Length: 220
Image: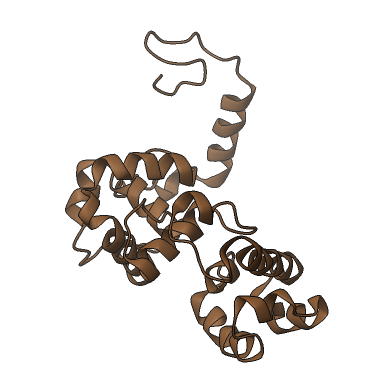
């Protein structure tokens, strides 16, 4: 249930909500009978609270109806539960049962894996396929935890802290590190001249495509 709540929400916020959630409804059977309005109020601060409350209710009811209130230990059964996708299923299997059935791919894991050249895919399912081929199975569970921690503390999305990063040499080998800034134009050139040149470039007809390049001028 905590993993369902974590979608588009920080773990810190989820950890503030779950004590009250599990105090009021300590089992799948109790949660399955929770009044929807009361459940929505408890999870409101996690965002998208109506959808999350609906998924939590549906998941709890399915656990009771199909599994006697217990959480199943297979990926196939977990992803059939409302609100549970591959990410949530892999989290539960890895953390709760110690079973490596796949690699958890959240925003941090996806971003850093692309920066390290382990995958080029933007979708979580495609990225997971690449990662299970690249990472030995015995490392699938800790791999995700390590990349998530690294993404929160060092390899930030907008301003990665590359100085002192232990993986910077790996990023450099796949050309991810930022290129040096281009030298500035001399101040004597003047803003007016710069604006004129820019307008001429925009208004001039496109040149013929060079061999080996796309019509937009980028490498094919």
